[in-house]
Length: 314
Image 1 (cartoon, rainbow, N blue to C red):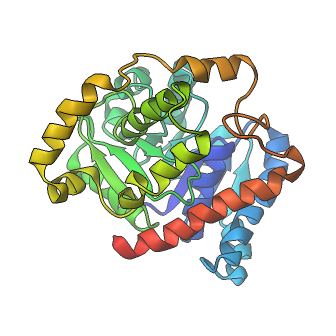
Image 2: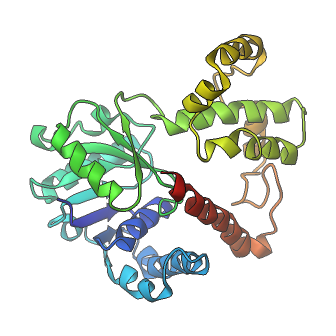
């Protein structure tokens, strides 16, 4: 049973993961080498929690305890040496993650389950320096950002771990309100990111062809397919629409849709121009950086409201 958790990396993902664990009463050891980051991370988490209070997702009286559940460390060994479960959330660099997992293997007790929050690196490559016994207790546990809001958690079942370890981790995530997806094959992007990229490829193509404005293309997705996707999966949608209809439509549309094997040129041009989206103030839309905090807050508020609705359909 998992009781004490460790999170390595206090960046955006690590902070969100720590918040998710602590909200459900788990003790969290949050590690980062950046001491300056550790001085501000709890205030960042407090701000995230306050928005949950405003949306009546949690009681304001819970905030102090949630923050108290998170213990901060700048020494890796001390942060993980008595944890039941440790997940790393450091940048997607193979050598960095390989070395980190090697250290965790040495520092953690034999019982500890190790997890990596990745969807782009192969688990077998990441585990190259691990002992055989630790490989049997190491998994991909892939989160979506913001981690404390998005319900999905993709869990690897690639053959290196036994069913008992998988079920322990799956039950653990269910205990914090997550929806586990069991991934049977180690393919790049796992499941959710591959689906998302398929949608994004066509969206970027429609923009490039000037078929509709950015606002209308987003609205077509939000009030069309995504309206159903919030509560209904693609395969169920196909069943209800009729597989014969989906087959005919596929034959008609797929030959004329984007089949690019790399990121859209329009996307690359925006990146080269420094138009990176919200973080730079302009992407497909423009953002007033004087209102950056309030814009981000409203973006998260929409996700919180969607979470409340989605919870009724599980």
